[in-house]
Length: 159
Image (cartoon, rainbow, N blue to C red; front, side, top):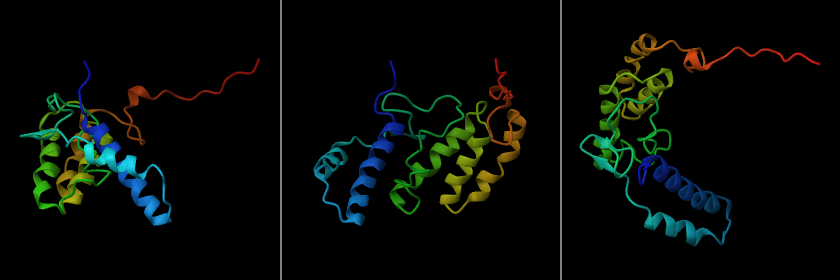
Protein backbone atom coordinates (compact mmCIF):
# COMPACT_ATOMS: atom_id res chain seq x y z
CA UNK A 1 0.00 0.00 0.00
CA UNK A 2 1.46 3.41 -0.93
CA UNK A 3 2.11 5.97 1.81
CA UNK A 4 -0.86 8.10 2.87
CA UNK A 5 -0.80 11.91 3.07
CA UNK A 6 2.68 12.21 1.60
CA UNK A 7 4.53 15.41 2.39
CA UNK A 8 5.48 15.73 -1.26
CA UNK A 9 1.81 15.88 -2.31
CA UNK A 10 0.71 18.04 0.62
CA UNK A 11 3.45 20.60 -0.03
CA UNK A 12 2.67 20.83 -3.75
CA UNK A 13 -1.09 21.13 -3.16
CA UNK A 14 -0.57 23.80 -0.48
CA UNK A 15 1.92 25.72 -2.64
CA UNK A 16 -0.33 25.44 -5.69
CA UNK A 17 -3.43 26.78 -3.94
CA UNK A 18 -1.51 29.58 -2.22
CA UNK A 19 0.14 30.55 -5.49
CA UNK A 20 -3.19 30.60 -7.33
CA UNK A 21 -4.73 32.86 -4.67
CA UNK A 22 -1.71 35.20 -4.53
CA UNK A 23 -1.43 35.37 -8.33
CA UNK A 24 -5.11 36.22 -8.72
CA UNK A 25 -4.77 38.97 -6.11
CA UNK A 26 -1.64 40.37 -7.73
CA UNK A 27 -3.29 40.41 -11.16
CA UNK A 28 -6.59 41.77 -9.86
CA UNK A 29 -8.50 38.70 -10.99
CA UNK A 30 -11.64 37.67 -9.14
CA UNK A 31 -11.45 33.98 -9.98
CA UNK A 32 -14.59 31.95 -9.38
CA UNK A 33 -12.45 29.07 -8.09
CA UNK A 34 -10.90 31.11 -5.26
CA UNK A 35 -13.39 29.79 -2.65
CA UNK A 36 -12.47 26.23 -3.67
CA UNK A 37 -8.73 26.94 -3.33
CA UNK A 38 -9.34 28.45 0.09
CA UNK A 39 -11.43 25.44 1.11
CA UNK A 40 -8.68 23.04 0.03
CA UNK A 41 -6.15 25.00 2.11
CA UNK A 42 -8.46 25.06 5.14
CA UNK A 43 -9.07 21.30 4.98
CA UNK A 44 -5.56 20.17 4.06
CA UNK A 45 -4.03 17.94 6.70
CA UNK A 46 -0.85 19.14 8.46
CA UNK A 47 2.49 17.82 7.26
CA UNK A 48 3.22 14.45 8.90
CA UNK A 49 6.23 14.68 11.21
CA UNK A 50 7.86 12.62 13.94
CA UNK A 51 10.90 13.01 16.19
CA UNK A 52 13.17 13.05 13.13
CA UNK A 53 11.28 15.83 11.38
CA UNK A 54 9.13 15.50 8.29
CA UNK A 55 8.09 11.97 7.39
CA UNK A 56 7.52 10.52 3.92
CA UNK A 57 3.80 10.30 4.73
CA UNK A 58 1.40 9.94 7.65
CA UNK A 59 2.20 6.25 8.01
CA UNK A 60 5.75 6.21 6.63
CA UNK A 61 8.79 7.54 8.51
CA UNK A 62 11.97 8.44 6.67
CA UNK A 63 13.74 5.18 7.54
CA UNK A 64 16.17 4.39 4.71
CA UNK A 65 18.58 6.31 2.54
CA UNK A 66 17.17 7.91 -0.59
CA UNK A 67 18.66 10.33 -3.11
CA UNK A 68 15.72 12.75 -3.30
CA UNK A 69 14.73 15.37 -0.76
CA UNK A 70 11.00 15.19 -1.46
CA UNK A 71 9.93 14.79 2.17
CA UNK A 72 11.15 18.33 3.10
CA UNK A 73 9.90 19.86 -0.18
CA UNK A 74 7.91 22.42 1.83
CA UNK A 75 11.23 23.71 3.19
CA UNK A 76 13.12 23.77 -0.12
CA UNK A 77 12.41 24.72 -2.82
CA UNK A 78 8.85 25.77 -1.91
CA UNK A 79 9.73 27.78 1.25
CA UNK A 80 6.36 27.14 2.91
CA UNK A 81 8.08 26.19 6.18
CA UNK A 82 11.04 28.45 6.91
CA UNK A 83 13.80 29.16 9.41
CA UNK A 84 12.15 32.54 9.99
CA UNK A 85 9.27 30.71 11.71
CA UNK A 86 10.80 29.95 15.16
CA UNK A 87 8.32 27.13 15.81
CA UNK A 88 9.49 25.41 12.59
CA UNK A 89 13.26 25.46 13.08
CA UNK A 90 13.51 21.82 14.16
CA UNK A 91 11.35 20.84 11.21
CA UNK A 92 13.74 22.66 8.89
CA UNK A 93 16.94 21.03 10.20
CA UNK A 94 15.93 17.59 11.51
CA UNK A 95 14.94 16.08 8.14
CA UNK A 96 18.28 17.05 6.60
CA UNK A 97 20.24 15.71 9.56
CA UNK A 98 18.31 12.43 9.34
CA UNK A 99 18.80 12.32 5.58
CA UNK A 100 22.58 12.65 6.07
CA UNK A 101 22.58 10.07 8.87
CA UNK A 102 21.06 7.39 6.62
CA UNK A 103 23.76 7.08 3.98
CA UNK A 104 24.09 5.12 0.80
CA UNK A 105 21.67 6.46 -1.78
CA UNK A 106 22.59 10.15 -1.90
CA UNK A 107 23.86 11.51 -5.21
CA UNK A 108 25.10 14.86 -6.48
CA UNK A 109 21.72 16.60 -6.45
CA UNK A 110 21.11 15.30 -2.94
CA UNK A 111 23.95 17.45 -1.68
CA UNK A 112 22.94 20.58 -3.56
CA UNK A 113 19.46 20.27 -2.05
CA UNK A 114 20.82 19.78 1.45
CA UNK A 115 23.23 22.71 1.05
CA UNK A 116 20.31 24.85 -0.12
CA UNK A 117 18.21 23.87 2.89
CA UNK A 118 21.09 24.62 5.26
CA UNK A 119 21.66 27.93 3.45
CA UNK A 120 18.11 28.97 4.35
CA UNK A 121 19.18 28.66 7.99
CA UNK A 122 22.26 30.81 7.44
CA UNK A 123 24.54 27.74 7.62
CA UNK A 124 25.26 26.88 3.98
CA UNK A 125 28.74 25.68 4.90
CA UNK A 126 27.24 22.68 6.72
CA UNK A 127 25.73 21.43 3.48
CA UNK A 128 28.67 22.45 1.32
CA UNK A 129 31.11 20.39 3.39
CA UNK A 130 29.20 17.22 2.45
CA UNK A 131 29.95 17.54 -1.27
CA UNK A 132 33.22 15.53 -1.19
CA UNK A 133 31.21 12.55 0.11
CA UNK A 134 29.02 12.81 -2.97
CA UNK A 135 32.04 12.34 -5.22
CA UNK A 136 33.03 9.20 -3.35
CA UNK A 137 29.54 7.70 -3.11
CA UNK A 138 28.88 7.26 -6.83
CA UNK A 139 30.27 8.59 -10.07
CA UNK A 140 28.13 11.32 -11.55
CA UNK A 141 28.13 13.23 -14.79
CA UNK A 142 28.33 17.04 -14.93
CA UNK A 143 24.51 17.03 -14.91
CA UNK A 144 24.59 15.27 -11.49
CA UNK A 145 22.80 12.19 -12.82
CA UNK A 146 24.49 8.89 -12.00
CA UNK A 147 26.64 7.83 -14.94
CA UNK A 148 24.97 4.44 -14.96
CA UNK A 149 21.67 5.93 -16.14
CA UNK A 150 23.22 8.05 -18.89
CA UNK A 151 23.71 6.51 -22.28
CA UNK A 152 25.47 8.16 -25.19
CA UNK A 153 23.18 9.72 -27.76
CA UNK A 154 23.81 8.21 -31.14
CA UNK A 155 22.32 9.58 -34.34
CA UNK A 156 19.82 7.31 -35.96
CA UNK A 157 20.77 5.90 -39.31
CA UNK A 158 18.47 6.91 -42.11
CA UNK A 159 16.91 4.16 -44.23
